[in-house]
Image 1 (tube, rainbow, N blue to C red):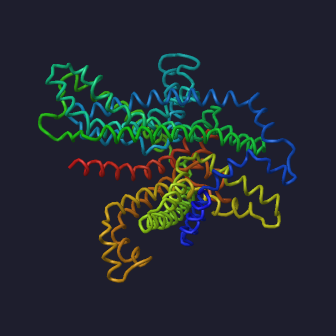
Image 2: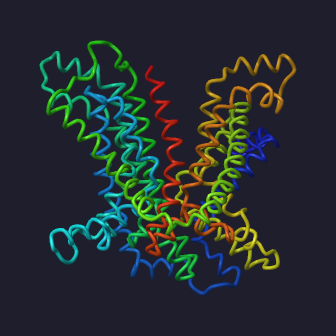
Image 3: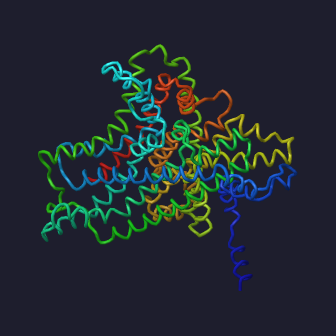
Length: 554
């Protein structure tokens, strides 16, 4: 029976699916290489004496407990803080009506434009011992010594991550509360329940799956971060990976740490998927809050002021204050800023972003068209494999790309493969595609969902099929979706730091890398210019998202 089933699957395999399989292998190779690090490949090639098991035992007795403990504490504190801030702001703008509520709805999205490492640079520049705030306090009140807690600490990182990443929770909780809670809140009010009881027993339980999904996204971003934890000197799995590879020159240890980080990310991804399924379950049978009797409760007086405080505080801490801190050196002394090289850094960032965006959109179109044309299990599985890279941290992708390159260099040194990966744009663009192809694919598939299958059938009846169908029928209808996909990939590439820092070609520094290097060298005033450029680029998808949410409510 098993042999017959295997034979049927082999006969049903189409040679047309082979390019898709090769493409999926190209995009999943870093993950497969990291998992293969547990095999004794170096010993098989005659290189290295330590086995993967011995390296793991050595790390377990030295650095691994510290990495694990710090990562868990950081994740727990950030998760609690982001859940409180995101849920509180979402409840304020959906359950209540007050002056300025419409403006608050999109202002709360602004921290999405701030890369977390840029926020870390801004707060460090302003609040450190030699920063303007402590200098002013000492000069004004005649004080001495340190007056504020150390910014570069675990607490400082938690602060940065909470106010940089809470919009993930805010967006999902806002959608959940806006679509499900209003009618039930009104029914509870008619039954005599107080406002506090309605919030705690009706609204928040309905939003719990959305909050869990948002917290899972926040934790994945926190685990994947390198800029903040490295700059603050916090020993997490991400910094441990780079230290093992670059400082200790132990690629197997780096790969094994990458595997452990990947396991944590997979667990969080499963939590997010489970929460999304619960969100779909709770959505069924609940109408939208459009009737007159289910409108948000009007706030006046001190309650309106409290709602303003709840909404403005995260915006100020996550966007307004960091931007103001970065603008201070620009206004104080323009001569210290690296204007002469800024255009070069920006050109490198734009070039890499444009190349990756074009390739990612092309790959996304090919995958989405393959699923539409042949929606069988194999094709869908290939597309899912190609999308897994977005959940993989950049540090893991770097190790996953360089590890097989090292193996091939040992086996066939005459090929010169490391130079192709690290000395040209091939390696960095490959890493970008692994990381961000899923972004383009999601946007293109969203565009395909709005194209009825009847158009395909009509085109085939008129003699148009194959790639002609994509070129003459689908492409004119997918232009807006593909443009959005390319723009999102472009912005993500501009802000990407871990993979860019290791794999960028020689003399091709980008805005993100330069901002990190200047901040690490304590040249925070000079880091303001490239950092603000990244913030300006990050505002583009935030504006798009705000317009999409606003049009969806009409």
